[in-house]
Image (tube, rainbow, N blue to C red):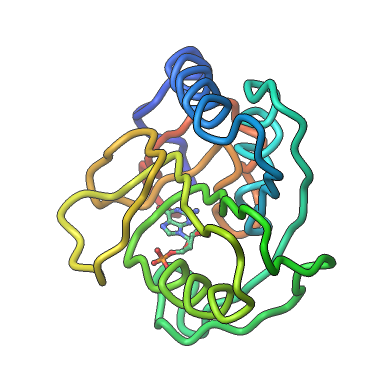
Length: 174
Ligand code: 5GP
């Protein structure tokens, strides 16, 4: 595997997370905010985004796996790790690394909304353009990227490259 072109640089990510963190701080001032990161990919975004939020927040994580091949989402989602906390009457912000088919988030919104949170919103660093997906309101969005398979900043190729500080395409697979 070769790391291809950089789509979003570390500096661009940092600047965008600063903006997103400021917007979240403004919108949730005085509210009890729970950030929910979707493992594994979102752990990097979650850690960096949270440090740009200046109100007190709590963290929780869910781990999900989508049935289907490694690079294609099937829409059938299995919860590998559920939230540790109850979310009834709490303001919940789901933090995702990337929205591709949107099926994972669509499922999670359905699953979490029945637990009756005070509000349930989405933040995603990357959104793939040109992909058909169910309607999803992403309240805090980072970058729109072409519908290519990307790695870095939490996103893996066969379990690796999550630690790249930028987002790149995969150039060639040997
Ligand atoms: P969706 O349900 O929106 O199709 O995709 C959800 C998950 O698929 C993402 O959270 C991410 O883990 C994975 N995914 C989607 N697109 C990519 C990609 O381009 N690269 C990597 N490494 N994972 C992706």
